[in-house]
Length: 317
Image (cartoon, rainbow, N blue to C red; front, side, top):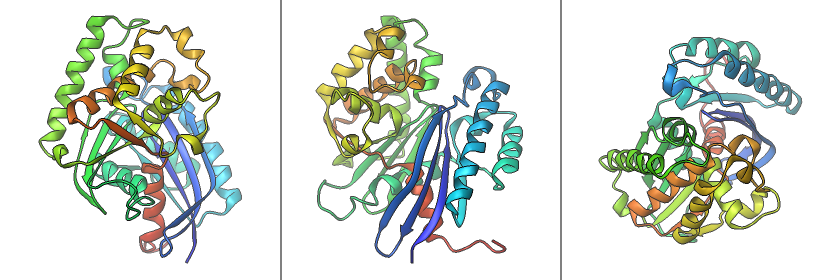
């Protein structure tokens, strides 16, 4: 039976909406509305431990737009998932109350492990069983505040979330424009240590296919493919080699803000953090020995939607 659901993923850098018709029996997901806004909810959280008032207002403004779209399309169920920034913030109750008032649902500030499992489902559901790639998959979701590592075949077997995201690494290390070699070296050391922590739980050496998710990865793909504008259809399931990722990373880390802003496929909200995101991806590939990444446009947002289509109705809903 087809169900119309709405999924919202609120991360450190962006907030995204998916309204879709899903048929669990057929394994199909049909987009009705998929959109994203850069709100930078995690602005300064790594330093202050609090969500900034201006960041909250940007996020609430996006929520008001999303509430209108959800109402117009008549979604049966809505799930709002919040990740790294709101997990870390002292004043997350202000965030929760604002979302509840606007959307009428309780925002779920999920654990890193649950975030990883949802990302895995969203990324692999459509390619599982096709034989197009070897398994197990190592799904890597590079967000603004954290990166999730998930290993599995038809379902997650091991997962770990670590605090290396494009916003966090930029704010912590890559503050110059362009960043200095010392700053880049410090960032690499930080990322390598986080990968080692993740590897204590996730046996990455068993992976046969690296699947990369989220805006940093898809943007690196768009730059590699030299797209004149962002094209999700072309980017979805593109395959990038380690050499290609190295070349784009070197270009981004050597560029000024103005030079990065001139790249056609690069969203304005990612201009200041894309170098860090590319660096995280490159370092993961180098440390795991996986020399190709399959880029997926489907990620935690799709996983949230699938959870709504397949879970039983909550009591009282």
